[in-house]
Image (cartoon, rainbow over all chains, first blue to last red; front, side, top):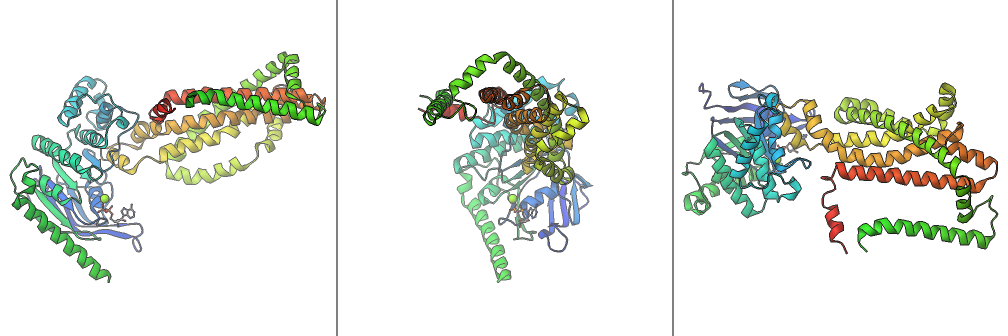
Length: 272
Length: 260
Ligand SMILES: Nc1ncnc2c1ncn2[C@@H]1O[C@H](COP(=O)(O)OP(=O)(O)O)[C@@H](O)[C@H]1O
Ligand SMILES: [Mg+2]
């Protein structure tokens, strides 16, 4: 409880209501979660349960209506300034080349911003190296519309990591990709994480994805969302696709699936 | 014929066909030139009065461009304000709509009282009539930045100004350049309206003078010159648009190139 590294990201009894206090939508309620420094956490749950809301709470983009949000030992009061984010939509800027898209955070985040022009050569070298590790060597000069969806998402990952954030937030980053590309990107993301060990929160509705990538999987209830189960995944790393068809892996996925089905059934009963 | 060549050739064919039908219609119906002159009479008038027509046309071009330049500056400033601030949007947008609904011809007499006969009322009218599309387009480009992208930038510590500079303005550029094509033709309308109501120079003045002397072919010749200047300016800004925002029209050229 007192060890700050064990609670690098912590939500304590958090609720958030969109819109007016009385008639607004209660998106999450009584949300408790704790994530270690350097941990890879996945959040799964039915659609509309408040997963994206959780991302906004952690990054300070939306203030909690109740409860406390703590990141790095400090209560979050406004947007954090050092987070990397990637979404289902790659949101690359179409007027910038892939390389310049990846460099964008360095033009904004301190301490890079102040010296960006002077150190440009160094940053470009770093961005090229990062692009190469995700398999985009040779595409630095291409514009986003010249890349496939999977390549755009790789570039988006690079953009979220170029400033070496302590915290990476991924909101269903692979949801719009075909199954083959998605599984390729699991390996890419795992390799990046194993190399750099940033703290990562991955929102997904793909249970195989969650189990493949995460140290812990948090299952959320239907709206208003809260964490109803936290499952530690102690499978050895690096994990690969073959491992994802092994019995122990499949068993974990089935267990999570059953838990979500239960949560949805409860919700349907409550609605009836 | 490629679609691109169609774009250059077909408009000329349409114009030529229009002149032919017009010529035949006027001759067949036996209309007198002071009701509707035939194109041949219009061209004859153009050749006869070439010097004065071009002199007045250049004056109109000057006032139009001056008014247009003002409207670009003002329109962009207003568009940035309205597009990046919800408060400015709520405060200004209804006022802008109301202002844009006023027929500008109604303002010209007031401008003439304030500034006298001359170029100033024409410049101001050209500006007032043409800033609105620029403002709306710039505001739209800035206001429609994807929320996710905004979140990415805010979680990097980006200020509102950072977001405007890195995303809002570049994103608004295609909207802006598209609006310039519309705005420049409106600016012509504005300066000519003003010259028609009160001026001693410009195409509008020339047309009023000519029609009061029943020189209807000259009126039409002036009209054709105005139309030609409008098209020329439109094309200039279309080229600028292509150059500046190639990334927004991506694929269109490719589609043209592959099309039969
Ligand atoms: N900006 C908003 N205003 C009002 N309601 C919202 C807003 N964002 C999300 N919601 C609502 O809050 C609930 C949770 O949304 P979200 O966190 O996006 O769910 P998820 O990402 O799990 O699908 C949903 O019912 C959604 O309709
Ligand atoms: Mg979501």
